[in-house]
Length: 159
Image (cartoon, rainbow, N blue to C red; front, top):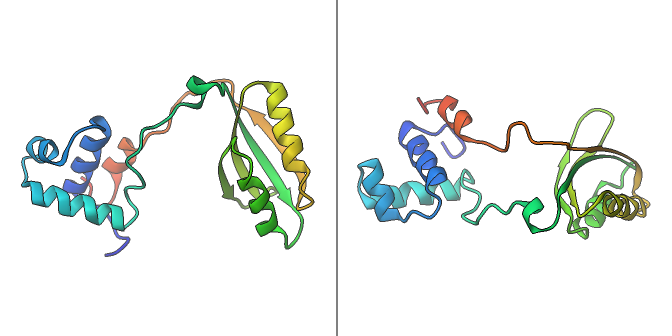
């Protein structure tokens, strides 16, 4: 199955890689009790399927000068989605953009140096004729940070 479930070895592999992000394939094989070739084949398969998205470090925006995290909902002018996305792609403080259902068309994850800087970013977004309206929510704290482990353990065949 190209996009099917992951199995128990995949879960163990992914969990071990998340817990030890700098570990090499030989050490992964040792920790999992399987052959290095098996680990290499599994990693290659998970990368090609898009299960593993990258091997880069997780950078914490607040620690590099962007302590403000906000979620900005956008309403887009009819038929101008591609134009809006192109404009958003030019704003480096916009970390993610997701198409959504409901009142908003897009949901953006945005970081800023200050609330004043956030206001400048929103003004820049609104400068695009493709964007009709924004609604901004500033995150005050992170109660549950991004996590994937619990989901992996409940994945079909992930036992």
